[in-house]
Structures are given as C-alpha cells and as structure tokens.
Image (cartoon, rainbow over all chains, first blue to last red; front, top):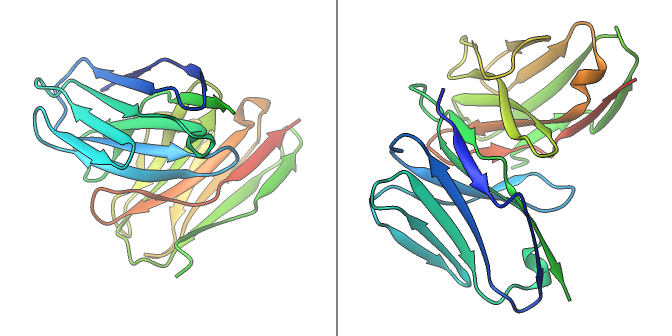
Length: 112
Length: 110
C-alpha cells in the first residue's frame, strides 16, 4: 500500500526559531492533508493541499505541495510555546473515499 | 454538537479479556474510522466504514472486530486482549475530506 514518510521524527527548538517538517511519498498524491495533535489530545485538521506547487499560509504556518505532488512541507516561522505538539501529514489511503494514510509524525518541542 | 465522542477514556485489561470501545458522531457523516496510535508509528488504520452497513479492514485489523451499528455509531471490539494491543485508540469520521477525531481511549493490557 501507499506509504507516506515524514521527517524528522523529533525537533527541539528555542522559542522564536523556525521549524520545518517534511513529508514524502513514492507515488503521486492527489492531495495531502496536515493535522496537529497537542500533547494528550487528538489530531485536528489544519489544511488540505490539492494543486501541484500549491502554497498556503495560516498566520505563521506555511504549507507547500511539491510540483510533482510527491512531497509536502509545513514551515512554522518564529515558533511559540503554543506550537508544541505532533504534526502529521496524510495522503489518500486507497480508493475508498476519505480514507487516509498518515505519516509517522514530527514531535515539536519548543523551549521558552 | 458534541462532534465525535468515545467511551471509555481509559481502560486497563488483563490478557485474554474482551472489551468494546464505543464511538459516536453527531455530524451525520457517512464514513467512520478506527485508528491506533503508538509511539513513532503515527496513526494506523484498523478498520473503517465507508457508509452505514459496510465495514472494511485497514492496515492492522488482526485481533479486532467492528460493528457499524447505525450511521452514528461505530464500535471496536477486542475479543481476547493481548499486551501488543496496548495503545491509544482514536475514532474519526468524515463527510468530505477533513477527518474529525474523537478524544481517544487509552488502553493498557497487562
């Protein structure tokens, strides 16, 4: 089945530093989604990217979808302690509508 | 709207015991999912139900069964719990592309 690989597994930053997590697939993705999970919480949808080369911004978060639609990234500018958590990318998980395959996630720690 | 609810929040089982995890959503979504989350493994799909009356295996279905009781409810059953099933279990639902997750059940099997 399709696999989505995500790196790094862990990232420790000082508050104010930037952060980037990367997601890669061996096959072309029709779309990619990003979720955030706060410590002790549940995953919450952030965004979906559909178009080749698409870039979307949400305040300090910038999401990109590669030209070949095989990779994606999430970049956070000037991290804050509220950014702490695990960030997951997810690609389509097969032919069943709505099914997803999640990456392993990147755990972000922000030191004040 | 409560969104997606799960019960129980925590459970400790002994090896060989059985239990059912309950999930309900009030968003009138067609599709529902059960995932398990283990450290470093991300979210792995156990079973899903694309619509009421249908269920299908996901990536890690062994040791589990599911029931789509109606459009709102999707339960996950462990017939004979094993320590390898110690995990956090999330239920999710969707009508479009965005999945909505429940708060999770933290299960420990000793």
